[in-house]
Length: 127
Image 1 (cartoon, rainbow, N blue to C red):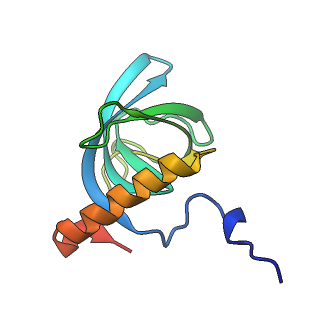
Image 2: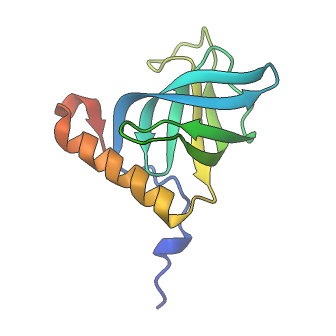
Image 3: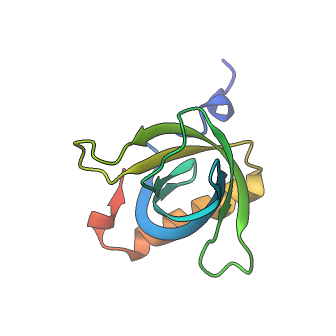
């Protein structure tokens, strides 16, 4: 049987995640927006925003990883939103899965997530 691991959805809901604030910029109908990503995995992130984009919106992201000399440019798709005023334990915002990420960027993000998971207290990380 052939190995199908490379064909899995970029966001594996079991992928290690870390809660960590990172500046992220993206374009919306209102123009260029800068917000904070508060949850990151190698397959996507969650952006705090009072005005989430509609589900299935494809968006270009500029994510600034600490220690990097310039932001990482990524393409993503909104997979889930949490509107302001919704009864939810999660803050208003949107989940974005990364699309068409080259191996270098995916590796850099994955290494960053793993480094944070090893450095941060266990309540900041989730499986």
